[in-house]
Length: 193
View: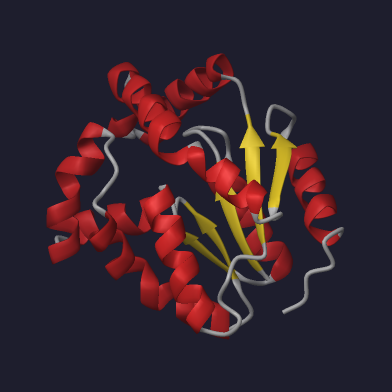
């Protein structure tokens, strides 16, 4: 099974991706968590990505591809993956799709879009900042990240809808209800492998 989670920051895609990975016994690949780990470890990618993350900007495609490529291929060989935060732009999606056409059993099978209103998102992000101490969850960064999502990531929805693999889920429900709706939608596709 090969899934992608798409949502505004704070919509719960990380939580749902973890639950989906456990449910389907596939890898959870969060580009944000992987990038933060690279920054904390002081790797070359981490040093190059740090300023982008602090500002709430997207990390350049070439760095994200370098970090994600091997992880995605490895996960696909071992049952699948749920991607969280990659691809995040049309350019990334088109490039990933092009690569996937050349490699068997790597291409996305479903894209889950969690729909959550912006007021709810702001409340969730402020709460997360307090609990986790995330420096990318202050009001200025939140507003900027919403703008980045609208201009860079939202166009992915039409791209995946055009391929017939987009599933829209109400993300404002309790976590368990959101998860149940995702499982129902994904299972209705009768995806294997």
